[in-house]
Image (cartoon, rainbow, N blue to C red):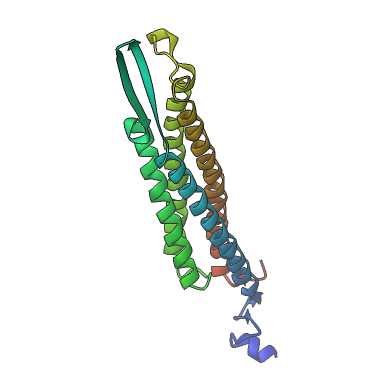
Length: 211
């Protein structure tokens, strides 16, 4: 046994080299697999939430008749495409849902194990970017919804939700679904960071001189 250790033999998941303490990296791989499986589930949850938010917003439409005089009635339709911030909100949700779905599919193809440190770094950076971009977009959409609900006295903008009650309610529901998606994506980003640091530790499978 002593001779085998000196020759650097690999047995039972342990690596031993001259002057080192044998360290197992099997536990690190198991941890990476568990985190990958958790990330896959969360990515599918994020897809469902983003798609629900997207569908809720896209199907939101309401027409209101403004009576100016008994003989003059103007009909106006409120829909997502009428507001630039909400259009950006819709497209960003679609992009994030697509990204999450592709990441989940790729992880399944690699059998829940990262193929390289570059892959982990790329996933980590992209997951962080997705959270911040979606958070910025939903923040803008929330501001628009707030102004539509409360109006803006300083520039004499009246509240429009009195005229488009159902439209505003549906916008609010869409924003809530999106915030839930952001929380899920934040959890995924935390897992990505943990995976990266775990991979770094397991890549150093020996400790010289017993330290």
